[in-house]
Image (cartoon, rainbow, N blue to C red; front, top):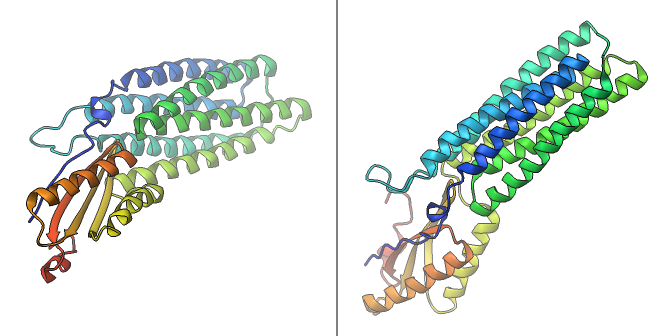
Length: 311
């Protein structure tokens, strides 16, 4: 006896489009690129140049995010019965690669400046312009982060975390350039740029790791798995068992599948009613989850043998 049930249709697919948030990110990237380029031209600081290069990465990542969100928001079709949510992982992975390339470019520029130090100019004006750019990124990054968490969008969250990393980078550059102006130690500027590059590499690694996990059908996070187990354990006290529990994420959606073992004497209607209640409880814990249940008679030995993925 088998019953397949699908839940979680109240997920992001019926929510408003997230593309306006990405357009906000693109506008912020264009504004900060212009501001940081002016700051670099005024001061000649390689630290500020590295900051401007990272904003170019922000722009490229935001453009990719716009394209992938356009795909991810498409409804399911005959060729993609589970939807298009995984497109978001391509966006975050692409942005991670761009960040790595930016880190390499920053390291090369910093190495050249370390070997051939140059004095900085118009430090006060340059730092003021850079601080304004950092404030723009801080505001937009917070907006995107909150929206990404609310709508379970890895694309918005990745873009937000990159913008917020950019804020810390900008603050570090401002402090470093200010220290050069006060101390006269020109080597501080390229050293700081190298530290910025290292910080960017860490951000890239985090994005690439999470994107790869999503594309490889990684299981739900541990805290969400614990929520699922808490619901299922409550049914064991009623004489209902389960096994072959599996979960995965695909962008904003979560998928849960399991076998539920009920007394063999039960009618189909009674087993179905129990599964409906079980799925409802799971969706209350994880509102964006789609749940697939296979019902088996508890007393049949064969029910305890088909546990593998390839049965």
